[in-house]
Structure formats: structure tokens, C-alpha cells
Image 1: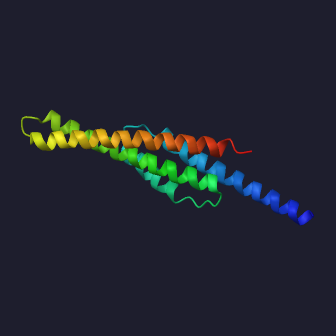
Image 2: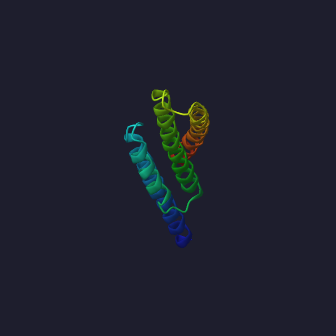
Image 3: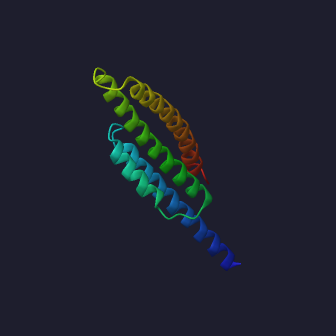
Amino acid sequence: MLGVWLAACSGKRQESDEQQRIAAAIDAIQAVPAEDASGRAELADALAKVDVKTPAAVKARDACAGAYRAMAKSTRLIDEASAGLAASSHADPARTIQAAKEAVAAEKAAEDAMETCSDARAALLLRP
């Protein structure tokens, strides 16, 4: 009976440790200004490499790493489209329009991914 209790306690400790590591990594990404897309992407890559085993931690890690990578891509595409618009007299109009469409699509995908990240993080933090 004691062995079962100790195993249960060990499992809860692992879950708590993983919960704290993932939450801290997500907090670190959120502390980086949104304009620093490369900084956020770098931390998202580090988050994706955090070794966790519990399903809730894996789900939050994967969802949030993907979401912040998508946000970084969106920011990059928006910057490229903005640069094309700023240099409109020298830019290819078809390429500028295509870049703007890609930026809008990437931004929508990133927003959807962030919602999934937020849900997964909340589920992780609300676990008993």
C-alpha cells in the first residue's frame, strides 16, 4: 500500500514540475516584446525542446511552441508586406499584394494557434 502511495506522490510531483517548467517557458516568451519576432521564435524553439511526459504538459508545450512560431512568422510577413507598401514605387504590385495576403493568412493562423495555446496552458495550470 505504501508503494502505491509513494508512486502516486511521485507522479504528482513530476506533473507539478512539468507544469511549472512549461508555464515558466511560456511566461519567458510572453515577456519578450511582440516586435521581437526572432527573440520569441528562439524561445519557442527552446520551449519545443523541453522534455515533458504528462499529456497536459506535452499539449501545452506543443500548442504554445507552435503558436509563438506562427506569431513570429506572421510578424515577419507583415513586416515584409509593409516594406513592400512603403517602397510601392519600386515594388512589384502583384508581389506586394501577394505578400499582404500571405501576412493576413499567417496572422489569422497565428491567432487561432494562440487560442489553442491559451486553452492548453489554462488546462495545464488548472490541473489539480
